[in-house]
Image 1: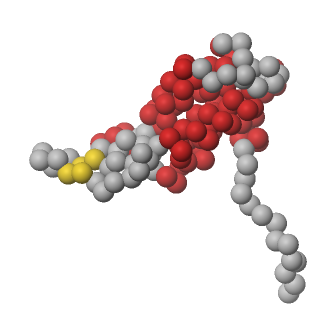
Image 2 (image 1 turned 90 degrees about the horizontal axis):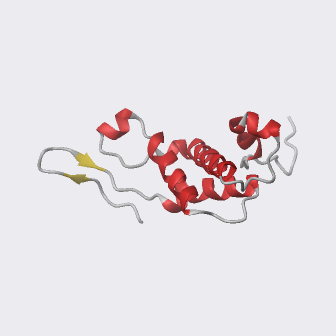
Length: 127
């Protein structure tokens, strides 16, 4: 859903409604499924993706009433979601694209495969 203004409860706690699916979960699910070659996205893959997102929250964020991690962590969250989806695909026998090297270090494998939006200048700058 869409983000809304913070909600202050009568007991003084504040909660921060935010957006989730398109920002935090779907990119990691798509990345994980694509990298491992899964033919279907199962209910369990969606569950572990949501669980990975929830587990990313810090104790401080939870104490502040936040439901999702800070947006500045989105790339790392997407990586953690992708890894969770891949691990579930492996458990389900749906990871035909992964070899032993990739499975030995999923974190490095996924990091290497992530798109990095850094562009080389088209025109060389001259001093």
